[in-house]
Figure (cartoon, rainbow, N blue to C red):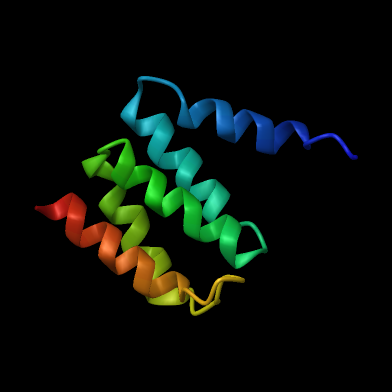
Length: 88
């Protein structure tokens, strides 16, 4: 098994910090990676961590990402649901 690249480990670590700005940036950074499932999950993390500042980053992903996860979820649809939850 290969080791997780350092930059990905750093982004994951940033998701676990108490700083909302770092979590938002880390989620956005992870969402830019190639696999749709990898892009989908940080969007959910923003909702689970209740990061309202993440809406701006999510909006950009929602407008551009039409990828589909291996379980059939379209990334932009999941992102729109995440945005709606955060805006409530």
